[in-house]
Image: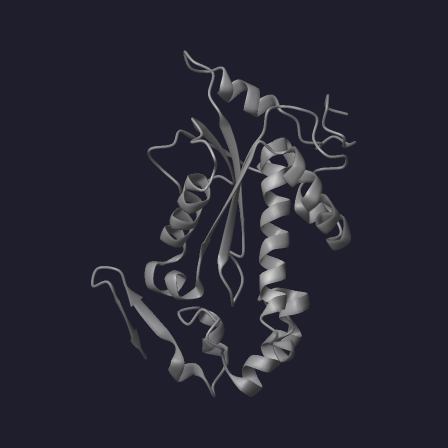
Amino acid sequence: MSPGTGTVGPMAPSYDIERLLATSSRRPRLVAGVDEVGRGAWAGPVTVCAVVTDLSPPPERLTDSKQLSAARREALVPEIEAWAAGIGYGEASAAEIDELGMTEALRRAARRALEALPERPGAVILDGKHDYIGAPWPVRCEVKGDQASISVAAASVLAKVRRDAYMAGLGLEAYGFGENAGYPSPVHQQALADLGPTPHHRMTWSYLDDLPRWRHLKRHRHPSEGQMTLL
């Protein structure tokens, strides 16, 4: 068990990275953990959460959201909200993803999350191996950061619960958003084949290539021209 994590196992998150970044400059820095959800979905926004802490003991059993049941994730939300020193959310819609591409959409969502924090962080721990945030924040990319860093683990839980609730709240039961949150699933694919895409779907994505009835709706993004066109 890592000290103060409240979780057990070899991958229990700790404050090791937060402490390293906080003390790696002349003055102590506030460190934010950042994670996203929705990158691989066919529909809905990409949601990013940023969390800062005071390095106090976190809620019990806090870890990577993928290792927790839906019920446990939801139960953790009020505990995280009461414990965290700051929480910020940012989103980029399906329309933004189509217009800008995923990397730029993630960048905008992450910056919105960081700017929503009550205090500007001096460093960021980002889950994954690619820095899609960039300046002015010093970013430490950490593969499986949601299993290594407590603040990233908290961000992963909050982002997942927030986006899942949004997708379920759309009420499009035929597409199964309450269960698949806009990700690929047999129910989702069948609804697309029968009913076509909704305004919440990403219209530049390749899933449309497999839908002969709706393939003509696919859009192509031309970054150099800053516009989209239909096939």
